[in-house]
Every structure is written in C-alpha cells, then in structure tokens.
Image 1 (tube, rainbow, N blue to C red):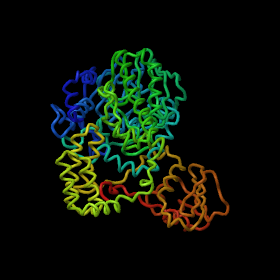
Image 2: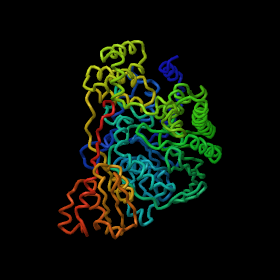
Image 3: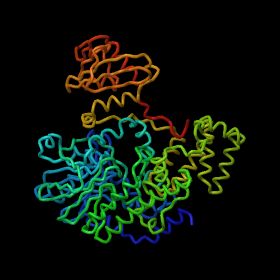
Image 4: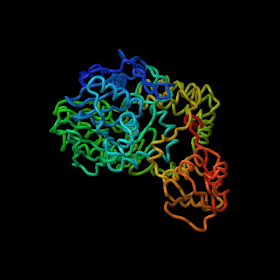
Length: 619
C-alpha cells in the first residue's frame, strides 16, 4: 500500500475524536475575521483565509494533511476547564488564559502584538474583563512571546505589577537563536512556512503544526521571575502552578507546568498534535530526541495520573486521565523509538539517508494521528539524530570532499548525454511514478544551466506533484515554494530586522558577534584596533581586526589602540548596521573620536550587507 493510499484509508476510518476535542468548549470567535496590523496597511492574520478547507480533500492535497489542517484552523475562544480558556487559530501557536480570581494569567502570548491583543479582547468580551496579573513564556521561540506587548507593557513588568515568568536561560536563547544565522534562517523559513505562497487547496494549507504565523509587530518584555528547577511552585492570584523544566527538548529553554487545583497540565511544545522537528527545515541547532523522550517520561510520572485536562502551546486539548496518559505514553514512545532505532542503525553502519529510507514507526505508534509527520518527519528527524552524533560526513571517502552542486551538475549532465537526454529520462521517471528520481535528474539540469526554462518548468511540475502528495505541511510548503521560485524567481522581500524590544534585550556582544560573521575577509586583512565606549550603557569593547577576522572583548580597553570612539548604542547600531553616515554624527559631536577617526569608517566598511533573497533552487 502506498503512503497516499494509507492516508486515504486512515482518514476513512477516523473516529473523529480529535474533531470533538477541537470543538469542545467553543464560545465565540471574532466578528471581523481580519486582524489588522497597527500600521493599518495589511492584516496580521485573516481568520477567513482557511475557509477553503471545508469538505473533503481535493486531489491537490494529501487527505491526512487536509484533515490535520481542518483541526488546526478551527478558530476562536474555547473553554478548556471551568477556569482555563484558549484562543486558537489566530496564529501558528495558541494562547491560554487562566482565571486567577482577580485577574488573568496569560500563557504564551502568540507571535505578534496585534493577534495577542485581539485574543485578550475576545476573552474580555465573552468571559470577563480583568487585568493581566502574569504572563508565562513556556519557551524561547518567538511564537510564544512575540505578542506580549498586546497583553501587558514593560512598565507594569518592571514595577512588578505583572509577573513575567519564564524558564532559566529564556532571554539569552530568545535573542540569540536567530541572530548569527538569522538571515539564512529567515530565507529558509519562507520555504518551511510557505510564506510567499497563495493560501488555498493548491497552495499553503498550514505548516502541519498550526496555521501560518501571524505577520504583525514583534515585542519582548524581559522576564522578572525565572523557573530554575523542577518542582518550583509559583502562585499568582489564587492559582498555584508547579513547574517542570525541560531544557534541550523542543527549545533550549522550555518548561511545562501543572495546576493541582484544576487537575490540569500544560505541556508547552513538548507534546503536540504531530511529530515535531528535531531539526527545523529553516535551520537550528539539532534538538535532543533522547532528552525529549526522557522529559516526557518524567511528565508522565509527575502529572499524567492526576490530570483530567491537558492543554498545550499548539494544537488542541485532551480530556480524561486515561486519554492523557495514553497520549503522552505513545508520544514519548515515538520519540524514544526514533532515537534508539536511528542510533542502532547508525551503529550498524547505515548512513543518514539509508536510515531515513528504512526507519518507520511501528504500526501501533504510526496509526496515532499525533505521531504522524505533519511538521517533523521520521525522515528528517532520523537524519538530525545522525547529525547530532556523527555530523554531516558519512565516512565514505567519495563524500569527503565532493564537488559543489553547480560543477557537479554540469559533469552529470554531460556524462548522461546532455540536457535534452536527461530531461527525457526525467519524463520517463515521472510517467513511472518515480518522482524523487525525476526531481534529482532535473535538479542537475537546472544547476548545470539555470537559463533552461523548460527544465525549470518541468522540475516545478515534479515539485508540485510531490507537494500535493506530501503528508507533512512543511514538505508541501517547501516543494511548492521551490516550484514558485523555479517559475518566477525568488520573491523579492526586504531583509528581516530586529524589533526595538528585541534589540534592547540583545547584548552588545551578541550584536558584535553578528557583525563579525558579516566581515569581508579581504577588507579585514590590514590590522587595526579601536576602543568602543558606549556612553549610555557604560560599556567598553575592544575591537581587534586582522588576519581576516574581527575580535571583540567586552570590558577591555587598549591604550595603544589606533582610536577610541565614544558614542551611544543607538548610534553604534545605526552607523554599523543600518548604513547611516557616521561623519555627520562626528561633526555634530554625537560621536567623539580620539585618534584616527578613519578607523571607525574602516570598521563600518568591513561589514557586508545582508542578502535576503539569495537563490535556493537555482545556482
């Protein structure tokens, strides 16, 4: 039975339990489906945009993914427990509201300010208008903190009027994960989330984890209370929470918590309606599947036997102690199987691609909807485990120093008799249903000659067919975005920037790390040193340039440096990263230089501009 036939069979036999859980407790949704951005120009999110998901799956969608999308896009305010509410379908993540008597505890306030504000307004309208007493960030990914400015403000957090609770290490990881490799991650995220695709039955239809991320204003308020150990108890209003730290699972800093008076457990992003990513397609450090499974084992022991409600940062709640225990156990076993069997096969000599081809969950685990690969897949995750332990090299000398894609493609095409012959072979493979081989052949033709539009169109057609068959929302988006770029070239979008809140929370050393990875080595061949003194932060940084690298040391000053530059951090950011001319600021006295003023210009000249739209599916 093919994977697509299996998906049709599973959907036909679905007991609809997840649909019941998704609809249970529905109260209301917004009258206006468009949540506008604060600039009034575009919608941060349009609740009506997934209306095409009504009815049965068309031929352009895997029926299993279609079913998942129908569940994930049910939107509005839901009552999960007598005093626990969720707003779902407003963003890729969910936001939870816990009634603490005199006010609300807000858990994971979505990606952007506008949708978080809309969620709070919905709760205020239909349940109770109360002040926000606390915000909880379950982990250090932006879709779980970026909307905080829509539910509270920095002044109330600074005064202690509002608790902002997060796991230890949250702020460091929240601002650092996407800084150094941020431009490449953002470019690749367009593929993972289908950000440039039209939404519809032939386009983007969720990522498999949740709806598309909202596109509003990002914010960040630093936590004022940290969870540093499992078992730590925090009380807000009349609600007591018992926390479980789970670092290194889905995020570097993450935590679950239990509400004993409600017999309810919040599982953050450690337990989902899908198998998760160990290595996102956008890129990240590889996550630890063994730690993930081990922490789920701890969660089962700590919480499963005394919980009647389980809710989380994505997806839908689950109800009933037996249901929760069975869910967490099966989900844990899927990650444990994935880890242990990937390592077993690795230790038997299989390479990452061979493991991915062989490994499959046992039927008892695979038939559970929440273990299926809508967001992460067994294929990618097994390769991530291989990479975590052994790296990219498979020990075969032929792969030790391979040719780059473009010259290799030219040699492959020449060896196979030229582009026309390779395209004919690809057509034969496509007619035989061997789409992966057809894609490989045509990829060589495109990389050998990216002006061959016929080959680009043929490959785009293959990618579209692969997308329509894909059960993973991420794979569907990746294939369709690849097809889009083959036909039309990369969509020209501006580079991503940091919001003022994120910039404020980012240390100067992190920003200088970002500068260092953008240094043109030819320009950095001539050595020099300069002291940077940030007058508004009382910081000193020694910059040393030479041998093609930029070195920075905080708290160090060299009396022999060629220059000392005194300026505010905003002036440093604007002149070093934003292209604002520095000479005028020197002339006006905003920037003061002792020594050779040209050295500051030399430093600025080292930093290459970001390339936000570099090609991916072409050379």
